[in-house]
Length: 424
Image (tube, rainbow, N blue to C red):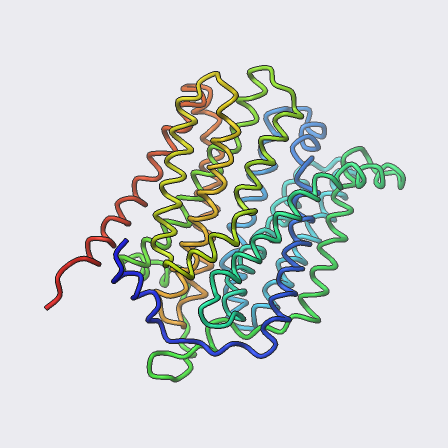
């Protein structure tokens, strides 16, 4: 990307750091850690729970789809709530929905009412939507020039939660059995308790502004204009740089989910033990979140568009490795680690660029619409990846992932060409 484009990213009107910003950022990091524990603890065994309850192995995959679709549905209403009442209210609402979803799953499993399980898992997805919104909240309490790094720290906290959550699943199962609940239900009891704590912290300790209302326009006046999420999405997509930001988020997430969800199936299909599959997924999660502070630092130092370009290159490398791997399992860990790393660069670079390319009045509605689009695309990718794996193998899944990257590459080229175009 050009130096002119990078300079343009830094020309957005500076925001004064929020009073108590460090405290609020610390609370956001803590809540993100709790949310990571809450999601991972329950979802680690959700597919097995659904399979046991329904007796149909294929139904197990719908557990993840229900949660992802729930996150997509919750994204826009939570963004509207952030504009109307404040980020902390939106975050508390998302976490509370997840706590309620955990209660529904426990109730459904204990009573045998299967449809209620999927409703509970969809509500559970609101916690994931709130966790994604927290990354934007971090930019609003950050000191000028540290927005991307603050965002990356909030995402990094997910690493701890994502690792600790599955480890707590067995403890939760034992707890559930001890109080008379069916097998595999206990983790959701633990998840519900964790989300209840996160809700309490967000509702009582977090004090974030009404998103988009305390930021000044170029003339210096605060804007109270309202715009709908999809109107903001349409308007932003017409701009080259905003379109690049949106596609970086959506395409990176779609590629990551589409390949990641089929990797365990591919590995177990070659007779590899579940323990080894877990190691590979841990490498993938480490790539996703462990390097996020580095990506945030790079976005603040060299510009978000360059970080997006780095992410696109890493994702392309990961998918090419997936194609050439064939039946060789030795390459899969490297491919999955790079897949997570590319996702981190794409998400942080795209999210940072998204906050600097649109007026404050449409920023939060656009963020909600983009997260909704990201989750809908990911759910679609997850649903079709199984079909592609059956027809064309793991190489076919990665070929489709490369095709998903094409719009991102085109958008990047358009921004780069506009940046080097001679000016009068």
